[in-house]
Image 1 (spheres, rainbow, N blue to C red):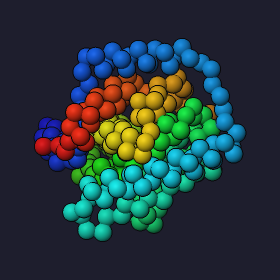
Image 2 (spheres, helix red, strand yellow):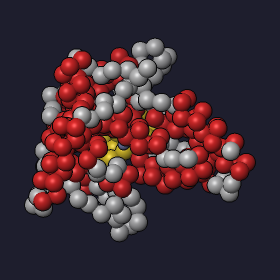
Image 3 (spheres, rainbow, N blue to C red):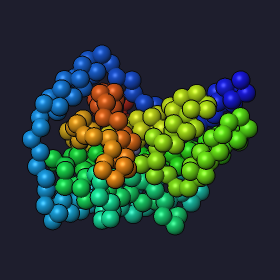
Image 4 (cartoon, helix red, strand yellow):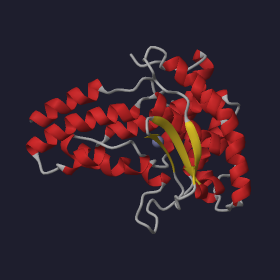
Length: 269
Ligand SMILES: [Zn+2]
């Protein structure tokens, strides 16, 4: 009972910065059709590592300044907020993945080589990179740390979920999202935080990719490809932490329409 009450408080205290556009019926059906088409398209080209590196560099030159500009506008009232992101390829990671984290205080975006090699267009790399920027701008790490701290106190008091705190106290790292969400969510009634943050990152990612001159709808098609969520190493891939569902694609479509109508993103509240 106590957990339920505090849980509601947590939900209201850590919302999103931006409104997540709700997809209209027509957008949902377009997404649904795109999803079907992507599922039936099994042809896949794997880029050479040189071609993948070139694509990454090309895209970064355009997405980095666009993301930084949006970041600086949104966080202008926060003292010493760093928007200059270190973006590079994680050469050690053997699964298709991308993530946002802080390394010694520097916001960092990493994309793995297998992910880059599996992309079909510059738009796809641009969307993933912009999505990770969204985690910085939405301040999801700070918010998750706060939630983890409060969550741990509740968990410690009522259940044996003690590990949730230590697992969550470190840096934000997308591959842990699902596990963490389940551990904490199990006790406070729903794993809505990380799902909501992913959608907010998609919303921001759509805006940034478009600002950088890419097509976010084409880019988001990267998410609708079929993929096993678990790799042989037992680690969750990008698809495991970021469910490839139609809702995400519909949200991207709705965001594009909302930006067109409003001239930009709308803040929450
Ligand atoms: Zn994400």
